[in-house]
Length: 207
Image: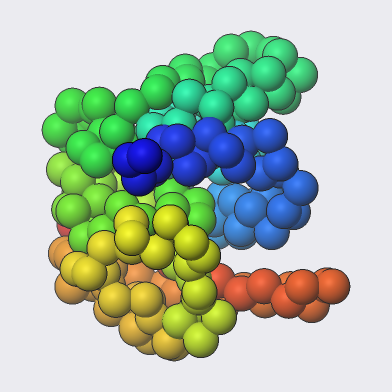
């Protein structure tokens, strides 16, 4: 039997993905810290999962949101929720690779990536600079190294070219090193039955 693909692994999680409420907490933190004015004409949600970041981004009154994920199961879950959460159908859902994003150079005002960069690797950061207009903004999250322990088959998909940060300063340095400016990073922690942590990073493409 062949090893499962990344899409197949996430398909297996799609039905229960929303039970982990930390995904929504991270998505809200990314959107709440996104400084984009005027309202974005095009916002990209990279590795969208079941759509937490895309739905949260509707608070920014975007003209259009393009949400891409490699997992058909995740996109199906997002589309099922969209009837209620996106009645104006501003979000376009697409199954496919999120790196590179299917967007023209300099076409996006904002990029979001919640709970996924640690599987996408450094090429994702470079691709966001490609798709963003000068001065466009990006927001992404990364796990905290001390609490990061990918299980089973997922461990094989963690790229070696993106070190998992121990501190907010290390998380910010990943964006700065890729060429972003105005980088701000902070640690987000929850203290429920299973404490969870992540770094939330906001950055800007050079003007």
